[in-house]
Length: 63
Image (tube, rainbow, N blue to C red):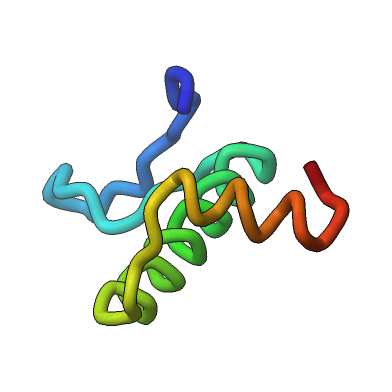
């Protein structure tokens, strides 16, 4: 993630109430949020070793 080009929406007292982001940065944030949600959903799934992963990929012809 790079530097943001955000703009703030302020109320009459000068308090930040909202933010405007370029659409590309907004979409990157949504993608990151989705990735984190997937990780959280899968955190209790069993894991396999890297060697087992390579073995399965070879068996499936993907490596």
